[in-house]
Image (tube, rainbow, N blue to C red; front, side, top):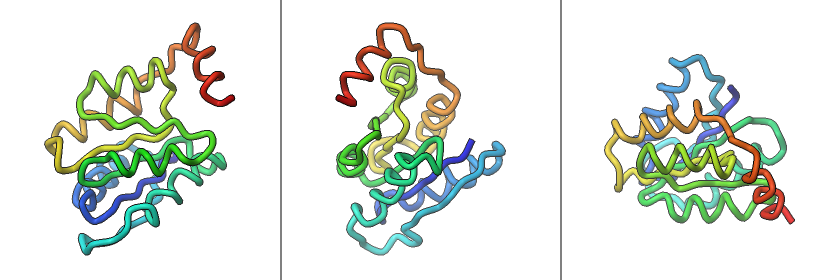
Amino acid sequence: MRIAIGSDHAGFAYKEKIRDFLAEQGHQVQDMGTYSDESVDYPKWIRPVAEAVARGEYERGIVLGGSGNGEAIVANKVRGIRCTLCWNVESATYARQHNDANVLSIGQRLVSEQTALKVVEVWLNTDFEGGRHERRIKQIEQ
């Protein structure tokens, strides 16, 4: 799978770990920054991830920050993006099954590294159920 990933300074450490984890799993990963833990404004680094997914250059995107809230808000401003903020395996499962989420947001300050990696794994490997959820996804896009 082609995956774009980006973070602000508060999500930088997990971005590095998740990027390496994805590459080890055989995914094609594009790191869109930031490239250190020095303070930055997160929209500069998150919007390009969402825009690249929306254009179809990447199948999925992952964005990270301190809480993941601001990152999810930025990503969801891009038409065609359904960014989900996940903090456990259950939230990641439902985000894919019911919402066909194409971007994942994680807050480094709110979940352990082990949980973050498991969330990524589940989110990537869970299929959209379609059915009644398809109708709802179409309503979101209207």
